[in-house]
Image (cartoon, rainbow, N blue to C red):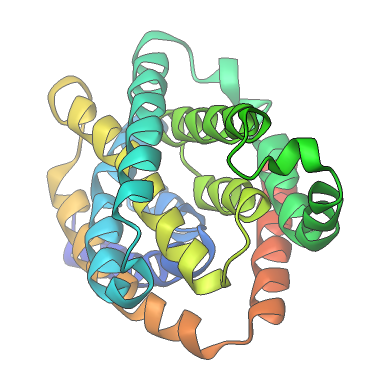
Length: 257
């Protein structure tokens, strides 16, 4: 790998860190850059997963304000996402890539649409007492769909990961009413847990290109540290719409390819 490829990956890493911490679309820049640097698809996928762990480190450092008081929630979500990430890594290592490729654009499109229609869905949920529960048994059972959704997004993140942040943001936005910067910060930690477990498996069992991972990861660390600062300064509604439209654009690109 030449110096030009290293510079390309470092620049793509900065863009990935920014887009990942803001919109959950890190792989929109990192994965194509790895392919352009000459890595075959499987090596690019696993190298991408290992490098993007730097996103979690950067966003955690940059989101301390939003994550304050969220410890119990983060532990619960991270355990669910990590379990899903382990299952996703096992799927990638044990099944042909074509087994999951067909459904990926549909998942990304679904997550993007859910982000767009979040407010109407929240109002519908609020009008159904059996879905909110407020500490009753019904409320306890209402937690099961969200837990299952986090587990499945973690599985997807461990398997492929492109726009897994969009899916996680959609899931968390539907079940919790809070400012977008807080939901976004929690999303970054949850998807990072799935990514970390999958990356650990790939370190020992898959063809990781360490030079590419180092260059990409360094850029990701820089970009993801800046991302939370940007989120605090952008109005919520335009940012949410931009995230959703970017996710739909990625879904269309994957359909066409």
